[in-house]
Image (cartoon, rainbow, N blue to C red; front, side, top):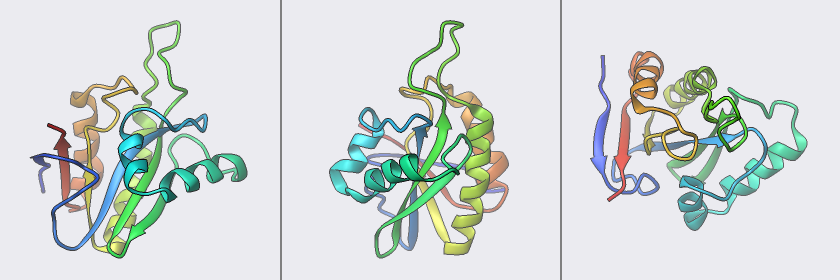
Length: 157
């Protein structure tokens, strides 16, 4: 089975040959404006515009769904709805929804294989969503890696 390749750098600027998909977590309330999405919006306007449009107009906008947005010839951004709302609730449950992340990554796995693309991401779900990498990493292994998709995780310096 493949393993995750950890790199130092910017996940919005993958330095790997071939088709690439940048994956990141979005919330289920249409909010875009904090965290990694800002780095995406700095480079391309379309992922945010398509996300906002999806939120307003499409019934499929819900936890566990993904949206693939082409931003360059061989580069796509995958908006993954894996976060419920944006703040930790009164019971102390953070916004991350691991089951939804797993559903998203399964769908992304199919897309990556169709596009013959590698996946590039920050430590998804571990910033504002409040998730733990030791929960996310096995999900990546069960989905993307199990299907032989190359995965690169970036730690921004």
